[in-house]
Structures are given as C-alpha cells and as structure tokens.
Image 1 (cartoon, rainbow over the protein chains, first blue to last red):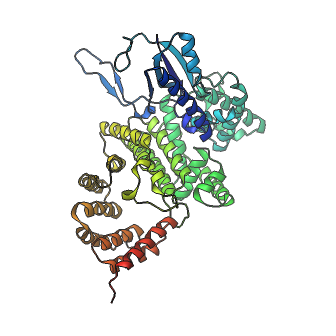
Image 2: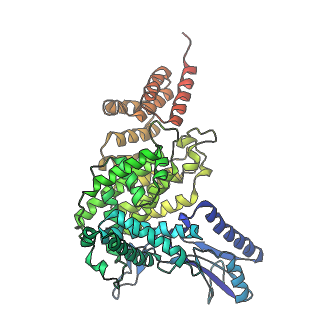
Length: 123
Length: 411
C-alpha cells in the first residue's frame, strides 16, 4: 500500500533555526531518503514559501474563467510544507519511516494514498 | 528545547510586536510584553509542543502580561492610551489580516522616521522588528557595542515624540509607507553587501535580515508586484555570496565567479518570484533590477550572458530611474554589446556627476585597459583608490594597476 507522509509546520521557522538544528532536521531527511531509495521508487517534494504561490479559485459563474488571485495571504499559521510518498508493507512500517523526520518544528501525517499516477503510480 | 522555540518566536516577532505596539501605543512596553509571553511559552509549550496558531497564543499571553505590567507599575498615562478593546480580555486577540498588515507596516515605518539617518533607521528596524541584540547589530555595522547602544537609545528617543497615526491608513498613505519601508530594506541589504572602508566586504547578518524583512513584506503584500520583486532581487544577489570572495578573501568579479557555488535553491525561488511579479503587471525599479539579476543568474557561463537583453533592461530602468548611476550601469552593458571605446565615449557625459563615485573610475580604468591605454587606466584606478574602497576592493584595484604597469612600453 502506498502511503504519503505529509509535513505541516509554520512556514519560515526552519530558516530561523540555528545552523546545527537545521542540520539535525536535514540529517533526518537524508536518512529517510536513503532508506526509501534502497527500497525502491519514492517521491518527495518540498514546497517553496507561500509568497511564491498564486491561487486559482473556482470560476465565479458559468462559462467564466477560474479566478486567479495573487494570494495566498500568508499567515504564520501552520501550513503544508511538503511530502514523501512510497510503498510500505503496512501502516506500522510507514510510521516507523515517518519517525525518522520527526522534529519539534513539524507535524507529520501518515495517510494511505487512494490513487497515484505519473512516475510513481499505484498501478 | 528553547532553541527550537526561539525560531518560532523570531518568526512571529514582527507581527506580534506590531499588534502589541498598536494595543499599548508604547514600543518598550510591547517589547517587554512579548518577552514575557515567550518566557511563558517555554514552560507552557514544553511537552505539548507549540500550539497550532502560535501567534494567537503569544498575543493573548503578551496582552495580559502587558496589562499586568501597566497595572503594577501604575503607568496610568499608558493605561489611558491603551486601545480600548485590549482591556476586554475575552476578545479574540488576533487582529484580522488587514490589521496585521497595517500594524507591521506601521512598525517598520516608525523606524523609517525622517529625523533619523539611514543607518540609524536600519539599526532601529533590526533592533525592534527583527529583534537582534544591540551587540549583534554592532557587529553588523562593525562598530563597538557601546556606540551602537547609544545610537539605538538616541534613535528611540527621537521617535518617542513622533506621532504616527494608528488609524487605518488611506491607500495613498499605505503606498507611501510601503515605498519608504521597501527602500529601507533594500538599503539594509546593500549596507551588508558592500560598504566603504571596511575589512569585511559582506556582512551576512545584514543581508539575511534584509531578506527576512523582504519576505515579510512579500507575505503581507502578496498582491504587490514591487515587494515580490524586491524579495526576488535580494535572493538573486544573495545566491552569489559563496562565489563572491575566494579562499584568500579576495573579491571575485561576477565574470570570474565559479557558478557552481551559486545557491541554486535561492535562484529557483527568485525566478519563481520574478515570474509572479511579472504576472502582477506593475513594472517598478526592483522588478527591472531583478530581471537583470536573472539574466546573470541563469546564464550558463559569463560568455553566454545575453548582454543585449541586459542593455535593454538598463535602458528601461533608466526611464524609471534617470540617475547617473543607472546610466553608468547601462554604459557598462554597452561596453559588452558595442565595445569599450563606445562605452568610454558615453562615459564622458557622466564625468561631472560621478567624479567622486569610485565605481566610475574603476570601470573607466578597466575600459582603458581593454582599449590598450594602460597609462590612462592607471590614472583612473589611482583616482578610485582615493575614494574609500573596501579592503577587498583595494586589493583588486592594486592588482589591476600592476597589470597595467606591466604593459607600459619601455621609453
């Protein structure tokens, strides 16, 4: 079963950490990437900060184009930062891998993937 | 644990301090209240981790801590000034996003008070908004801690009497504040990037703090092309920091830099921001400068740089900002597209305006050298040496002079 390990946190906090703490966080990520790489294909994404984003809202009326707005107007509230996706034997194993990147600045969510297409697919 | 939390505190500091300054109308009290809240957070968050909305938590706690302080010290005068809604403790402390935006802008704008020198404005913003210690700021400006302490105190005193309107600013007023504040952030970066007569060519703290503030502005004013472009521009510049000075501490010119040392993540973000600002339309000076920086950052090698495009960007910049320095940069691009002799001729028109500008003379020296006029080049480089180059610049200029002298034909 494919699981996604999604990462939530306050945008900008990682950048505010002192160097050695940043390294500590990255060490966890490198370890996870290496471990996942040894088992097969995986996908990992880190999003750029919210200021780089543009929002596409649903079209306000029929036969109209979707609304492209300049936001999001970033708040310091917890946001979606990135994710990993890979095949795991079961939830227990996915959780074990997720633990490798656990740190005080992020909250992780492990959730089964219903469907994946592209390079990595649920087949 | 607290080091992890520090990062959350400093991330939330500008917004929190901005709102608290509006509540209490007293910057020192706002700072004290915020420190109190952070101290409480260290114990309260331990074990449970930070709350989902740390800003709301910090604001509630700081508001109560601030009110306690006012009551204890009987600062009645202050209590009278306090925004009425703050006294109703059950009210949601989190201002709506528009208020936060104006609060942060106001706080930064207070630091930009015209009675202060540009350096003092920057120092004050670093102290109050970024929360750097006086010692850290002193290091950034390469002065003694004591000197900086006096400067910050004096600056705070000067603005204490200054009345900044706490009502919602009109769109024109907001635009004016945003322009002033953006310029201060831009100059903060430049102050860190290069400075006269100093041993350190680049003071990373100032550059990084300027980027943090530019990020804050881009976050708060996500619909403003100028602020997004400013962040893009600073990221493009900063991406080159590792290649700019070699292992002997010598300055490396853009052409000779090892491009593999450029920070690709920063460049990628800068490109994304530039595209976003282009989408937003408005084409101000920051955007044109970011577009120029992008041409350099994305060229695979110095030889492959598209100087035609860069020259066109400088021509566009000169329309928005018709200053001699922009014109000089335009001519530097022309030297690449039309040759050194053409550029030297164009430079003559700037001789009066820029006679004290050291870059004018180093550029002229370089062009004379290229045109096979080493004696005139030496004269230009020697003039530049009298105009306060930084230590690494001095080394480069002296190198150039000895290169020229080797070309002198024996009489």
